[in-house]
Image (cartoon, rainbow, N blue to C red; front, side, top):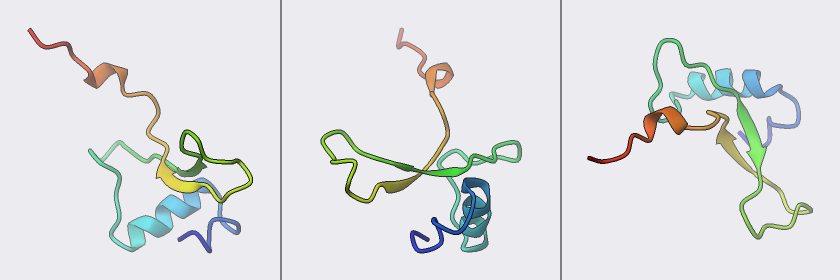
Length: 66
């Protein structure tokens, strides 16, 4: 997938991942997140990033325990 990352948009890359049977955690019928490059804490931006699903902030699923 990383080889295709330079040639495809993030949404096209996500569609390619789907064609391989890969889906983000919690995938559902209304969820179509793109795939983006990200750099982990401590990584040099000169290094290649890692491909991740761009699912955004997960605030609504972090309910506090009672």
